[in-house]
Amino acid sequence: MDGAHVTPVLAVEGLAYAYPDGHQALFGVDMRIEAGERVALLGPNGAGKTTLVLHLNGIHLAGRGSVRVAGTMVEKSSLAEIRRRVGLVFQDPDDQLFMPTVRDDVAFGPANLGLRGDELDHRVHDALAAVGMTDVADRAPHHLSFGQRRRVAVATVLAMRPDVLVLDEPSSNLDPASRRELAEILVGLEQTILLVTHDLPYALELCPRSLVMNEGTIVADGPTADILGDAALMAANRLELPYGFDPASVPPPGPRS
Amino acid sequence: MAGAHASSLLVPGDSRLHRLRPQCKIAAAVAFIFIVVATPREQFWAFGAYVAGLVLITGISGLPPRLVLRRLTVDLPFLAFALFLPFFAGGEQVGDGWWSLSIDGLWASWNIVAKGTLGVATSVLLTGTTSLADLIRGMERLHAPAAFTAITTFMVRYAEVITGEMQRMKVARESRGHDPRWLWQIRAIAHTAGTLFVRSYERGERVHLAMLSRGFDGAMPRMVEGGAPRSDWTTAAILPATALAVSLAAWMVHT
Ligand SMILES: Nc1ncnc2c1ncn2[C@@H]1O[C@H](COP(=O)(O)OP(=O)(O)OP(=O)(O)O)[C@@H](O)[C@H]1O
Ligand SMILES: [Mg+2]
Image (cartoon, rainbow over all chains, first blue to last red):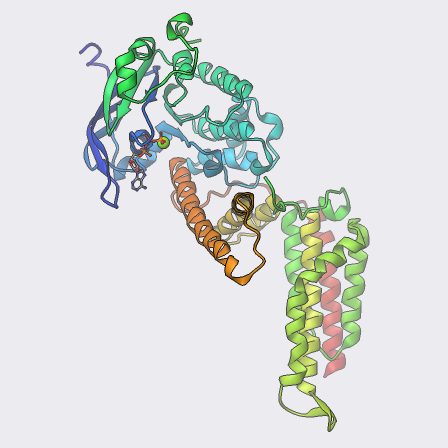
């Protein structure tokens, strides 16, 4: 395997996991993501995408197999370190935002890392600026529109300066303009990004590489355009392109800015 | 999202009361309430003085008096309870053959009504001039236990989410023709309550996971630094200091 000598940012090997109620969601997942990559994680409802993602920062700990972040094994003793490195943006911004003001919410993560005073203020300001939300800093998150809340949710994680940004269905429920604006924000970031999504054109636009997950394993891994162009693979995994969308007709994702 | 905004108790304004640092206002309000509670109930004039003080502050705050009065009605249920006391309490009674009231009960009733209403009025003035974010920050500054401020924060935040959820479930019910007029139709409402509980619980779980993802380890980080200027403390101290003088005078007259 090429690049085996560089430590990947995310390395998952033989990961299996069953929920406490006995339902097994992951059956041996293998995945490697190198620094600076933008990768899409595709797959039908119930494939295990969210479950996998919750392993990447140690919310769930591996039942069997292993998860490594930049070489560090995800386990109880390394959680603080792992959570600093891997930032998770949840599917529903209402799960993520809970403080009385946007500013406090964005400050929550870095404050947990021990930042205070001016340093904390700078982090908060930079993160809000990155998503274009500095002017709502003093408002209550629950008074913002859905798209604004989604952006603030991204900022809460950016403020922790993670090496890897994992987003669970970030484009869901966004209107087309907010969806495009979020894409612009993501393209502008230098972090490694893992994007869980049902929005295939979005994956094609943002991520040169895609993983397809089904029934708890990774069933395909390759350039996004190839995967979306493989009709048999798509059909076997309940993946469908929007009406009239032809992946061959759009330019491939550009190089990182 | 429908439903009253939990954070809209604040009436925006720019009065001296609005501008006081929240920690000073909270400390003053709490001190005032303690002093009121400790005042001997027999000294009516002292309570008159407290009311006068709060009326004056209402004037300074610029809160519409009607709004203050309307918000005062939240303590009506407690007042109703207090008004029963004279009928049921024992001890010496007043009245003639047809009716009788317990003297102890009357005093207890007056005590609850007067002190309770003054307490609620103080809170109305505090919450009417301070945003919830500031209230929480103020509590944090006063070194309220972090768990306490955390719980308040969640309550504020999720009161909204849960009212929203409740509203949506109600709409969903009604758009399917539910129009509860009869007792047996209440079943659907009971189901809604159950579902609401489960949904809120699951929401709480997810919020907790999201917090863990951001390095939460069970203790809320204290983010606020820098104290209030001395002038804020001295201004805020006027109310409790005056009340303390009144209360001490009341005790002296009392004994
Ligand atoms: N808390 C839980 N307890 C038990 N089983 C669960 C739990 N959460 C998810 N599952 C099950 O695990 C499997 C994978 O779920 P997961 O949420 O990871 O899917 P997903 O790929 O994220 O789906 P979606 O696209 O709908 O978000 C599903 O069969 C689901 O029913
Ligand atoms: Mg999911």
